[in-house]
Length: 151
Image (cartoon, rainbow, N blue to C red):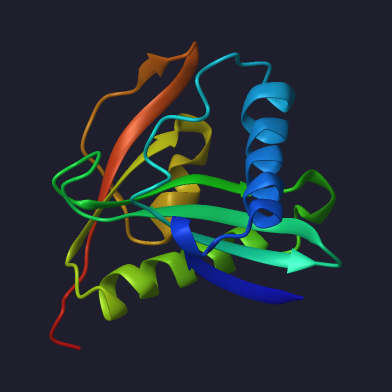
């Protein structure tokens, strides 16, 4: 298994296809939620993914500040169904947070997470900043992580 971090322009067409397929498989098909998965934020983002035998295991989209939010953001967080329950989600989020806070030197990360994952994100240091609300008929909550940059 190998981790990759690439800007949109660094992705090959094959890599982009695999990423978009994994996202559609989880967020549109598995969650039975027809919504515009391709949203014009991929081009400004970095794409962190773990690959095993040419298959996406885990993926997150790292979005720089002043794109979706004033803060940097982590979105489209997924672990493919056959790899769940093996700790990949935590590893993915820890790597995502590390890249944003240590490489990008950004202090705040905002996420727009599905409500059922609030305890998971909370265990990583995210604090809720909104009430639960419906988006695409799925309960969501906004959360913020503020890192101390003086480490």
